[in-house]
Amino acid sequence: MSYRSWHTGVTVLSVLVGISAFAASAPCEDLLKKAGDEYLGWKIPTDRFEACDGTLIDIGDGRVERTSRKCTVPGPPSARWGGTVVKVDYDASHVDVRNSAGTVKRVHWDSSTRWTKGTKTGIDQSRFREGERVICLGKYEHGFLATRIDVRPPE
Image 1 (cartoon, rainbow, N blue to C red):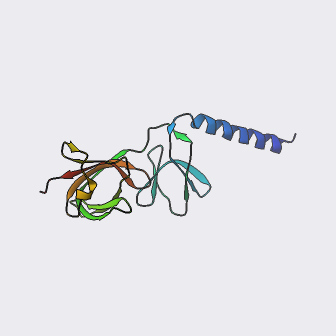
Image 2: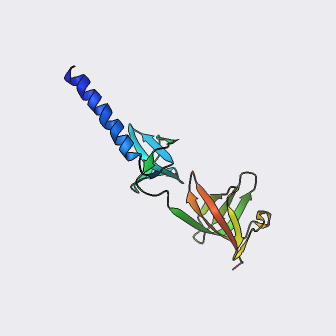
Image 3: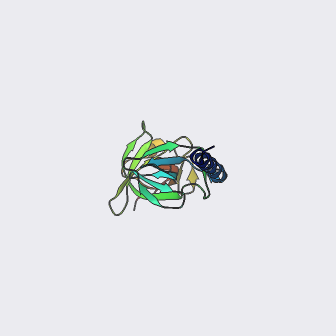
């Protein structure tokens, strides 16, 4: 066995052992492949990627894939966005919300999103209209996914 084939075999084994050890942590959703490197973490809005260690990376020409590999930190941070509803698209299950600084963010919802109005739960989402004040709580999962949307009284 030549040194080159032995070295290649040891390198492949080291990589496999490293991946196995790395995969024994908390769940992770995404893998960014860019310029020959791989980063484990979560895709966040504005075409960026947050690696497990908190580093923000521009996706650029990279490719994000779903993975079963795991991080050593918990999932993506929880998120909060509040403001006035600018546009509602019930068919696409998203709403555009403008905050007090004028920044508009698209917030998505799904069947598990809870709709509330103060302490009242089970609010019918069809009552949710443009011009309403809302607070959206959720997480970044291929965009902002709301776990709760609270309709607030007008200011």
